[in-house]
Length: 163
Image (cartoon, rainbow, N blue to C red):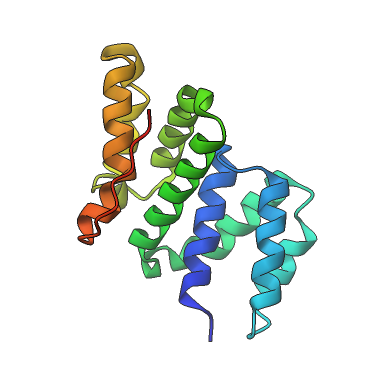
């Protein structure tokens, strides 16, 4: 029996590696943690361990493995992982905002159409364009909306603001 959350984590890693949101070193560290936690001794994690030195092969392996599982994913979990990574990266270096918004657009292009057209993922499409059309203030509003989407959706009291 495969862990449901593992699918979502692997899909998050696929999106994040393909878009450049995370690098191979970070992925390798997280994959090692997943591998050590894996009670089922799932072969995909071992296969992924063998290709972590090659970004293209890693992305190909993840994509191939997840291809027939895409509609089993809980995209809310994927979204929460993405939001948490965005928060982490921005807090580490606020000067990466423009680069970050471009990576979010790439993630949007990788999502299945049915998912990409729904909140909060639809916002990933327009955030990068806002630099040209509406400026940094609109980008900040959109990013802040995105980063607070899940607390609002699940009635949490957390309000997260980028400055």
